[in-house]
Image 1: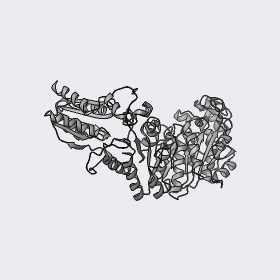
Image 2: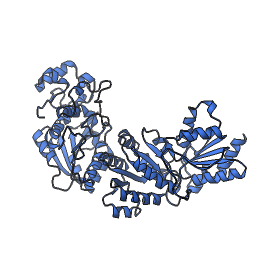
Image 3: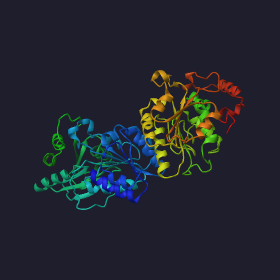
Image 4: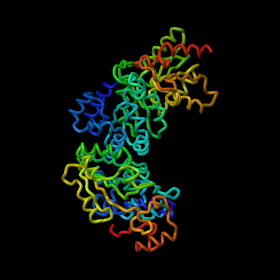
Length: 309
Length: 265
């Protein structure tokens, strides 16, 4: 995803002189082409993320289109107030790109995990929160973000995430992408677990269950049309994310659901994500996912249980 | 304004008023009839709690009608107690949370260069505000990029909300601190309009570095019973105190809600 981001950003910067990349002292060599082809438009702001958000705001107020890039927890938790006051209150077109989000840097410990940041950020007025599901979506989401009139948070992984789409999908912020049809259960996925969601759907379909899958990449604004459709026709809707079950996609859907008239809702909601705890186990991302039950087998098993109850 | 709207921070407003008068009165390249002109100089009052001073100067300079001052901070007023985004022509940034103005100023100064517009950016911060880490993050970044069209003016009245600013944190040697961070740092009398105008006009100063002006000021300047008395960070003057202040400043009673106490604009 990092490489897809860097390539797409470089292409965009070539076409649009307003694009400026701010980095929190990461991305060594990743942006060499951008630096060479767009002099002055790569700014290493150092290990000073709060200031970086303010600098981006100044650039945006003067008419430029800044993109801030650093590791997700440092870009978000540390800068909550700058994001709120500088970006959201002034509603400036700044794109925040949090890399290594969720459990991507599992082995570096909880300082480097971000399993609460989407919940925190989606409370902020006017901030779009987007978690692309594969490198194609990263490219498309970045293009959409830099055209967006207000601030956007893009949550991406690190490197090596598999492509799910065969080519770039027709992407719009706030519009979920349907990848698979099914009317027994519908899996809504935000972020890098997208291949896991598809594998879980395969397992369920082998059991004779119709399992739909969406890349539900935008938490805010929420695609209420898809929610209304799937909660009406399915028996179970599952949210899936490398994020706490509190406040993220699962939390967003639960809030939406609480406001719906009972008669219009057939499906129950199941939230799959990380538990409300810090990960203390020393492990790689795969094992961390297993720890939180975020494997195709564990998800399929929970779904079967819920549908037979 | 403070009396009618029941708003505090009068001491803080009076402390930086001369800086604002010097900036808007002569140094800034601005046209009140074109407040969003892309090449205009920017002035950010980062110490947003002193907004009443900014509003008074902007009104005097013709950015908006003086009647707005009479409604200051009332229900539904254009001018909030601390500035909101785009609340009034001439207000460049919503401030009030400290430590935001200088980072934004750094971004504006970078944009000025990238866009080859060459406008200048002035940020007025308070000495208490220099407690905030982002001030020093911005202070480290600006000289690394040689942002010579950026200037910070520290309103150094030696008080913050609840104590002496040199004692709450080790703020002493403030000019030397800015110099050590790579700024072209000078001290200036923050109530000497001529000295302020000259210093503000001389940005960039030829050093290739951003300019830091440590302005020695007096909190509550101009009104004997407020000067250097930190109670006036929060106190609101009574009607009698407003009359006495107006008398000391040589103003009529009507001027107590606005006007230009220095007569220089």
